[in-house]
Length: 408
Image (cartoon, rainbow, N blue to C red; front, side):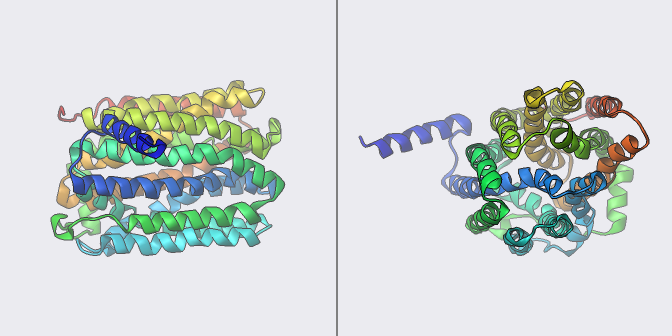
């Protein structure tokens, strides 16, 4: 048997161990999603290093906080996205149009050498990238069965993470020696290839139940009537304030106090990526077995390691636990929050529930990154800010233990 035949057999056995046997149609979609995620992994390396690039171009602390808030500004518009997106047919086309514009914009980074222009471009990117998130949530619910969805999505993210892990040292080397003019066009092209693979997903649009018509009163009615979902959103908010409030200050510590290079950050991000890879494999199974809420409880606890590590850091490797915890949290929030909103909502109202969740993510993300900067400018020591962040994250985890869910 040839090497490639042995490799194919080994990968097939690994797939069965990770996910189990899937119907042919589901397995085709799982492969399409996986290959798309692999190409997107190259793009992630560029995203991971953007804050360092901004600081090296001279971005002030307050504007670094604004960059950290940008993804969440887009989330504020997702209720509008729910109202505009197709109720059933055309969901994929709706998402692909926005993502093509967003990811193609990274080609322009090759021509940018001043931080205000880079800040404006990243703002545009995040607005277009996050706007169709409710449509993506609805598609994932309709395409992949609930009993394997967590593992399928986690396996795709594992492929993405492996590529990010492999590319991160290369990204650091290229940026240190050749600059963004070389690396960022590569990441943009890879993201667009990923999008082409996403369009190959096969599904019957008639099999996806139509979204209920969304309106402002509908969002309010969910908050008023569904106390369980409201409690989850409060826990999500507390955790987010803790996790995001130190974002700009973490970059200042990395660049100004510890004097880390692109290669140093790339090495630490490799640690982050490796832990994210392992976490996807573990958390995907936990979500399918226990549920999203039960999984996010422990993800929130892990997040408290991040600010505590920055309190004691004296060199780059003291930050390794923080980057490892970020890998766990990113993996957990990626597959956990998506599956949690599916777990707590009704199928026909998933769009509204998803819009509410992303609205809360947006509101907390818009404020939280500035909170740490404002407290630092008021004279509060970084250590006190980081300690408060840890307390908020643990409080959010505690609230999730009060969210009652049905046993799987």
